[in-house]
Amino acid sequence: MQAFFETFDTTGDVGLNVYGKTLENIFQQAAIGLFSLITDIKNMEINATKKIKIRADDYESLLINWLNELVFLFDSEGFIGKRVKILELTEKKLIALIDGDFFDEKKHSKGVLIKAATYHKLKLERKNTGWKATILFDI
Amino acid sequence: MNIRRIDKYRIEVPIGYVDGMRVPGIIYIDEILEKYLEEDAIRQVANVATLPGIIKASYAMPDIHTGYGFAIGGVAAFDLEDGVVSPGGVGYDINCGVRLVRSNLVKEEVIPKIRTLVEVLSYEIPSGVGSKGKLKLSKNDERQLMLKGAKWAVENGFGEEDDLLHTESGGYLEDADPSLISEKAYERGRSQQGTLGSGNHFLEIQYVEEIYDKKAADALGLFPDQVTVMIHTGSRGFGHQICTDFIEIMARAVKKYNIFLPDRELACAPIKSEEARQYIAAMKAAANYAWANRQCIMHWTRESFMKVFEMSPRDLGMKLIYDVAHNIAKVEEHIIDGKKIKAIVHRKGATRAFPPGHPELPEIYKNIGQPVLIPGDMGRASYVLLGTKEGMEESFGSTCHGAGRVLSRHQAIRQAKGRSIKKELEDEGIIVKSAGRETLAEEMSEAYKDINNVVEVVANAKISKKVARLRPLGVIKG
Image 1 (cartoon, rainbow over the protein chains, first blue to last red):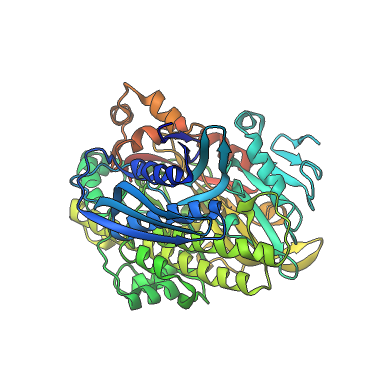
Image 2 (cartoon, rainbow over the protein chains, first blue to last red):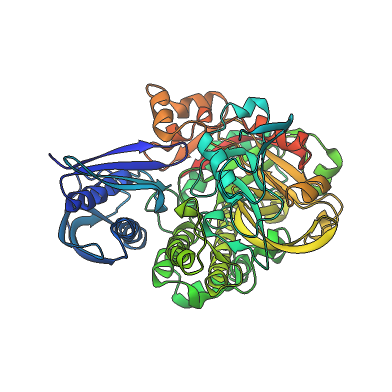
């Protein structure tokens, strides 16, 4: 199964359903999904790489902390990822490499402003064929 | 247990609707708006009623919709002895709020220049995803701003002393503690001061379409056809990061203090705990950031008007009427069963609405009560209301905060397909400019409940009183 994400929305906010064979797929696709909400990443150039380390107490918190780290990177530096590679993933730790670019109003479209990834209705489930995650963002 | 209609404007969510409720829920809603009432939102009102130390009832306003943990439109007061404080009861956008500026201009003077005005304002006031403010703050600037809020802005030349008198809490809360703010929040806050943000945030040029209470309108300096400016924004990434940081801290507190929660997003800490003390001091820093933000934006709005109309500040008469927070928790005095008590009142998508004579009101509004500013969607109207004695006694001096969405973003985008929302609004005499690729579709009128219906409920339930209705002429969206 090819890993992928789909967006859905609730009355006020926006969410991602993420499908993948492995947890690595889920973390990777969730990040791509988040970036795609902020701007069109298809035609984005790659001009920078970031290495990210995240710690948490369980996979769910790890997923939320990971996405909130990406929200922080965008908000503080304007960094947007296009390609994500998960280097290491355990229940308590994630290390990833992200290739991307810095947001430029002249080059990039303005999508959704994401305040945070939340625990609201958060799901990280094992399915027959792999994993599925549901994440809601406050926008 | 089912919900029960109490009267035309209130329904009760009885104890037992969910397990562990300590008090009932009360939702201010009539039959028109009840059609939009989501079951998830009702459950959230009930869930809040399970939290320790909740007083009287878990309230929700007619613009209610499902939020994170607490419903948007929720009001909950907790005892200062055995109650809790919860970041989810404030929201991610700490001190998201609204301010209203009057002017001496009438709509006939502004309409011929409205396009230029919208262009100038959208140039002067950064908005939308990824926009950066004109202010580059040092760490020390940020610290001062966190401590002094709108007062910092005024001291740095963005506005007048008089503005502070017309701002809830004088534009800043005391005892904010910059040492509790994470490096990440500092980082996110550094370049976002003086920016509008995105989503439902806006800057709107309006005119007074109707006056319901002439005496109160006179006291507020409002008259028919007069042009006003409304600014709706909050604490930007700075506040979002503080909420994110404390949701994690509170999740640990819940385990530490053995608090049973029906929903993880209700994470909270006992009011007397160190975690609660820290959250409150950090929340105050974010609240102050937001007041400074609205103050700076108002300052550039005044400058833009001066430029476009080539008029002096005195001739323009752009005085701040009032500024209200609608996402905040505050310690307040209330009377419960004839006894004066202090409580921490959480308002998430609800506005404080204090009655005439309340000691926290500025002298000029003592006789009429606190001005309450209710933005509607960009095609319909906004309202100026006042706090009432009944509201003080019933809903902890609280009322609604806006229209509340009915369509999700995608539903709105689908319904707007093939239409030009910009053109439709122009045909109605409203000039809009937005930064985001889909903002206008997401934010179109049909995506929201009719603000007129929402205001009718709070006015008829007497938790606030109508003064004036404002109609948009020009809108800047993120």
